[in-house]
Image (tube, rainbow, N blue to C red):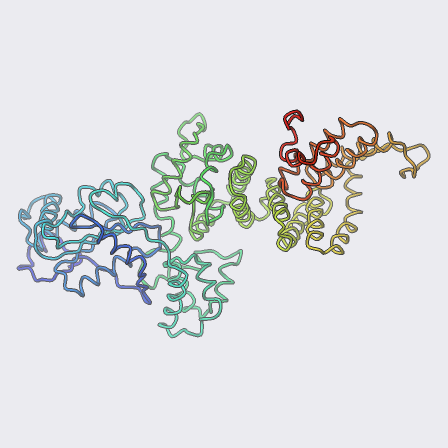
Length: 629
């Protein structure tokens, strides 16, 4: 009785109990019972005051909602429940049609031949409310909660009915009318590992199980649909977990190849990427119209573990969404959107289960499953990737300067952007983010992590920009400092020595003009007056600021030397002003607790002749008037 018309249903004759209406999906091979989720559903049922509890299993694509609902249907059939109805609820018309047929099969009162489908459907709902027979209605994949409002099964007068619904939507309407919402997430790490092992063993492919089974499950984000497709691929191609993981992490690998449609051996009916992005086109047409796709593409280059909500109020994000809104609301060009509209786009993606926006998660409020992010990136036109990377880099820069966000969260988001963007981050002038992260590693005393980090950054800079580019020089300076902090002085001095010739070439290309004495033939004189020394340091500082930037360690070192020279020359105001500027940059880049910042603060205290008890305040706020200290 899976697909009967009303006429066929009328001709069936007397009802034969128990009944099953609709196609209940078979349980997947190596199906996981997921006791934590099942317990959450059962607790929701036990703690609810209504006689009938509708559990709405809400979650993103591929998390196994339909399989959980199917498990309840099979359990009900095994227990002898009189009526089990499985309804494809993706379209409300299909729900009405199923109800109408069911009304005639159960011989519901007022279900008369010739009536409209809606009247027959209401007759079935009335029968559910009044019958003493036990029943279970499964509403699978509700896509329009508002349209479903009149068609939720009512409470049973005899307490004999139950409803289980699945949806990826997060609308408030789902939790009304006596319904309880139970969120369904991915497998736990143990469930994912158990599934992979059981699935391969059931196919007599135990030889594919190896030490990389758990890392493979983690790489797939513990997503049940992806694990199913991956297992089928490995069985078909006789590929062990370790080899599949290498292919999956390969830069040229695509989800369409690694999780192909023909690997849908469990009958899910959807390709993985398509399932993950199923509702994106619908969301694109909802208010705020045209922002869902560009917003999701931006979120896809950030850390799947979460980024701050505040990012969506940044100027760079607003400008990007304004420029990429589709369709444009005005033929005269893009109308600037507001930060409210940007956050509304975020909530829209949340409602359609495409990402999670949870204020209780703090600085990691906005999360996007790693496979969903990968599917989005793979379907993003190559011509738009540069602008997306630029926007993310500028937004993270704004957050960094604004403050108030945990640096660890900014670090992981910068790392994710760097990993996805590759050379694009350098091409859009986003390299400074990498420098900030590297300096933070050093400032926190993480010398072991700082060395390989700066090795990678300097290698990339040399490959992309060239050996003599100022950014490469800056990166190698940081590498040398990291070596020193790690106690590897020989490696540090080797970098300094190797870079000497290149730095000279950089300064020469910049047209360095220093003050020289007659007859020196281009070499600095052995003896110099105080004025000569000041002039030389001032020239050197000017060039370093222009070539290396005002916050480069060598520039700051030159400032410190110049401040000492000012002091020795009797120019105390200039010396103090110079040190205050150094301390400001160090506090911003390194933090007030960094040894370099503390050393500069102490020197500033000595120049001012202040009591030692005040030096701590001076390093925290170098611009505070002395009379208020």
